[in-house]
Image (cartoon, rainbow, N blue to C red):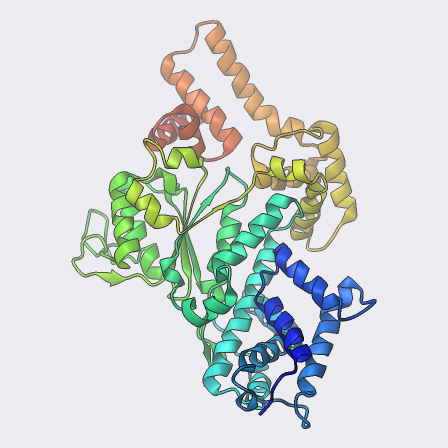
Length: 493
């Protein structure tokens, strides 16, 4: 039997802490620093390579054959050696996991075969792991790497607020203790609903995707593939897009003949959700109370009934919801029902506004511009980034509040690439409408309905959603939408 010395036990304890630490938290940095102390003179950028080589060397030293087996490790030390072997596997295969993840994004909803499945199986088999253990760690490593890439690559920025956001998203997927998650919660995260708060345009949908596509997906050793593509594990629905008469149909589905126009069965978002995935309900703050009650029943009982049916259907995924309404509004009078709110908020994540991110780290704006330009043109372009930054500095100034947040920054970038200007093209229509409203009021030439329609239209052009217009004016969302549409008809008529 293999028994660790005190020195070996200390080293493998550090490795266990590293593999289960949140990669976006300061805790992980502290562990890496402690491990770095074992490699005098090692550079930070080469630390992980040094660590992998050292882990492999110390594992090989445990047996004369150079290949320790967990079924020959003393019970006291078995968990430490098992963690070290999984650590070694994860980092030796991480580039192949990355390639598989990128290929799966391109392939879409058909789950691809894993080209290194046999090699991975042989790695675990030679070290005494059962096939079930191999499948479990294969799926867990795939999930870890996928979540890391989704969170790191889609939510850029080094401000304190963004570092905290990435840390919180990771914890939302794996909890604060991955070891306990792996033993007890892998197949039970459906009970943990999430509410994402943030202003319009901050990136709540991006944060939701990072959670929804990072779920645990079992590995099938016969097919040598994961049971489904992670691109299928996220379904979103913007609740503000649907009138109240159709909202429940989009959520719960309906049966043929359930109402006028229901000419065939329709699967709602709850039924389309994968058992390994999540649904994203955007602008949840706009739904009426009776729909909240029905969603509350889904969260409590994990069942729902399509419109026009008496048969209950099970819902297996997670619920992620978002609203741009402030926390004080959704918990106050006119907000969510208390029972619905407390069942929904297993975790609350706030996506920071762009102005806060820039205040904390002025370099955040350039980081975001680099990221945005790269997505638009397909590669890094310092020339384009510098041009957009110069226009922003000249026309908007250092203290521009970015009311549209990251979404506005993206549109700003597009317009600057086209016109090399943002301020005039951005404000022309709004300024013209504002001037017309001011003129009408000053000269007493505008009736109340025209004023209300014009004011709602002006706010809609500025903020981009009916929900924001309703929140600012105090109108019902559907009423605000009606005024905006009437204004548009008057302009085109």
